[in-house]
Length: 144
Image (cartoon, rainbow, N blue to C red):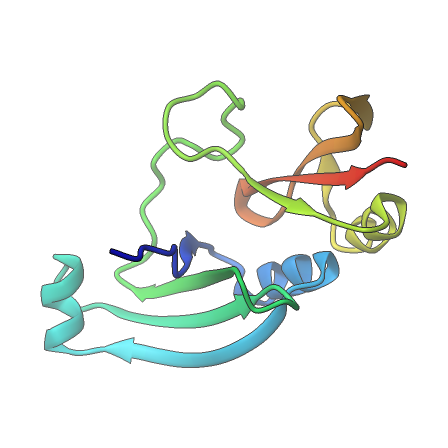
């Protein structure tokens, strides 16, 4: 049996900011669509869904993130925005990058904020950042 993860859903309020943020990391827009209708309602268990989704992929095509902006009903706040890394549930995404400083410079223009500090650990330079709508990402650059 073969299993591979297809994508991770990230619900956002500001879709354009999220596209710019993940684009600054290096992800590319793969597709964009409006989804709605009875099959969608049945799938997600919410009546009257109308949302816009943007699929973004890593340049190697191996990983994808689905950004979802709910127009109706509006996105529910689960109280997880800016939750610390030790809160239950999915807390962050980690991206391996070739040049951490370059990616941090691009993300600075997108309003990203460091959670802690850029540190060296076990042969890597790493950091955690908050992006749009409190989404947390980690960046990792292998040293030497």
